[in-house]
Image (cartoon, rainbow, N blue to C red; front, top):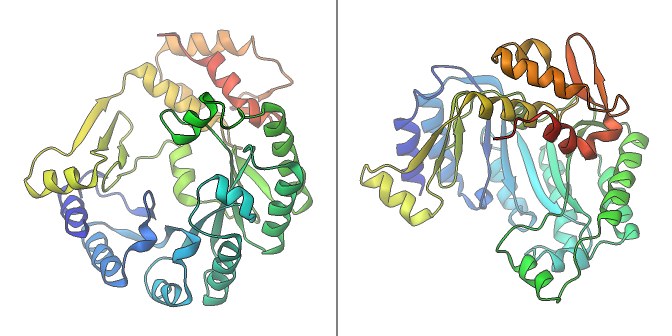
Length: 343
């Protein structure tokens, strides 16, 4: 796998047109399983083939049960300067329901060990709204998070993906459907918690203190170009999107045999407009009306017509930007759908 990743890095080094790399994110699957040697090989290739900014944010996504003291001592010696830990919950009942491999104790210990080793830039993921999560349980997980003095939080409402075990259990009556009322109630609990602890919601699901925004994810929401390496990885250059084969073995085989390992979709102007809406209106920065001018007069005309039908209680519209009001972030999809063009 590492050899295939290095080969892809070398083959696609021109994708970013020589632009300096400001963030690198090891995510998807379980990158925390990579050995120190494998990480060294990947970094050697990345720094050889790209200009990486001196202050680049370099994140490793990790499972709590992988972050032993020994593992963290290895990681702190690499260029990685940020960890994103998939905690999901600080309670056993939730973790069992989500079929997570780690325990609540391991979740807590992995964070404390990371901080002790010297990883000050930390993010953790938490999930709310699941059938197993009562309001008091969610309050406990939030309390644990704030006690740990972590600078960044990604909090997601549980969603049911097609063809998953959870979808089958709901359809079969084994598990109850999601409760929208509980979902929104727990979202409001989260809002109260972040305000009380001086956190800022800068994107629908992301929160931080002292403007410690995730550079990598922020680049996605601001429509910047990015290159994805490895199975299932996506890339975007402003006018086309491409994605790699998702199967590990098939990806490696295709790379080794110099066969195509990704598909490309050229985005129409309407597709690009929709991407612009979806990414920008989920953030505190909103949508720049100057950036809207790059689209055709017909799209601008549609936008101006549709914007009149959206309640002023929901949005802030000035001569320079359109923002969804923070209190309506949870309903931002409704604003986006209104502004979209039917195809």
